Image (cartoon, rainbow over all chains, first blue to last red; front, side):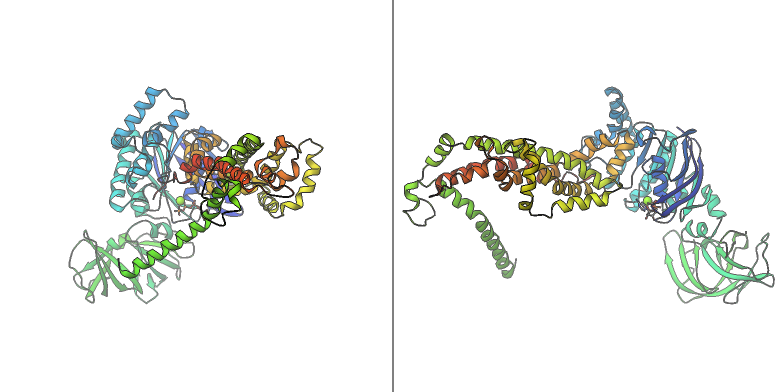
Length: 355
Length: 277
Ligand SMILES: Nc1ncnc2c1ncn2[C@@H]1O[C@H](COP(=O)(O)OP(=O)(O)OP(=O)(O)O)[C@@H](O)[C@H]1O
Ligand SMILES: [Mg+2]
């Protein structure tokens, strides 16, 4: 077990900057999830921690030991690859014991460790098989098994579940969480699936364009996104955004409607803002009331658990998430109210949160 | 299957058959002439099999000519060339496939450049270089020349095989605790066996049938390889076809054995299951 400190890390490939001045401290035993859109540098950061990519500038420490120049094999880290990267010419058992053999662990100890890991992951009946003869889910488990046999200082996961179907992914997600609870090892987990991020993380690191946008526990990012990027990235269905300006004590949207300024938000007259509201915080009300809007249903998407209702409002395709069924039919007029306490206001210039 | 499909399949099979027959016929003719007694060779006209077959040419070639020596020489030269080239090309091809290094562009360009000249142009300078070193008329000299001329292509060949192996595998091995060389030896190399077999086979046959340099650099019988030896059946006034063909058939044997040995790896898709798929 160990802590990982990333200090002022910068990475360029040739002249292409990929990571820019990344700072991050990961505590012993913490589960940190890196999220961000494709190409934002998540894998690169992970591979730098593993020692597979050179560090252009900055320092990475594991337990206060600088590891910039330490070879991957001496970092005592385990990694689960998106492709699983199982050794095709070795059996499952050999795949799992390879790292222990390289460390010249005694035979009995190896058998014991492989047996324990296989037991944890339900791999016992597969130990003699080659990866070729395994299903995708089984390969994924072997990849996990290979990581946990040797009790490394930290686990790195690079989108380990993205090649599985939705159902299996859900199952493995829970299993990873359970494993982390039982092993308690420091973990860095890369994904672009925000449900995985929300459910697994002690802390989420949201990245975009090689820069950390926000670090915090999942609900913090959900409730108080630091900027437009995080607000739009975290949450599904995604947050609604309405653009407007402050005029005469309210926010006037581009189509002329007004939104009351939430309590405690200071805006300059004429300031350009983007107002965010999550679909579950938009209410459908019975009739016109103070601050409600009239709209017409555009599209209805039942998800089983709830329903996503799209309406044209405030010059937008506004999404409403409701748990009530049969509440709206296409073309039907509706009255909509925004939950004032749940509004997010962002400065349109800086994209940062105002309140 | 519809009628049309059956006809098409039939035509396709026939075309393949015709091609195979065309490709194999010279080999058959080689065999046929080699078992035709000299007395019948010119008297029976053109027929597919002589009225009387005999192994007299084989017996003569094996007992009364230097061919056993020539075979041995060819085996030594081709085997050594194949092994050395494959080792060098594996290491070089791996570097080409995995690393970015200074001058890589120029090294590739140089390797390609060596493949652009007709070999005939190089014989005189080669001879001039090898002669003072005492490497003409020696098997070692031949091996050196063959290695030099086969390494570039073999390197590209091996590089393409390494390119086909996911980089994640050696990354995983290095994280598991292997040095890069251990990862190369224990993970990458076993997966490249089909490629190594192909390279070995390719270089072996190239060296086995090389005539030009062998002819120019070797003069004494004791270092003659078999393609040059074949020419000794051409004398000023006649060609002893029977013996020449018998020697030719015998010369096929090592190459066939070699491919038999490596064909297991040639057809094997070992990388299946490495990554998703
Ligand atoms: N070897 C390389 N040479 C040049 N550019 C590279 C190299 N590896 C990655 N990049 C670039 O670095 C950027 C970040 O890549 P990275 O793989 O870290 O993205 P990612 O966040 O993991 O994306 P994804 O979610 O698609 O996996 C990309 O724009 C990519 O094109
Ligand atoms: Mg990635």
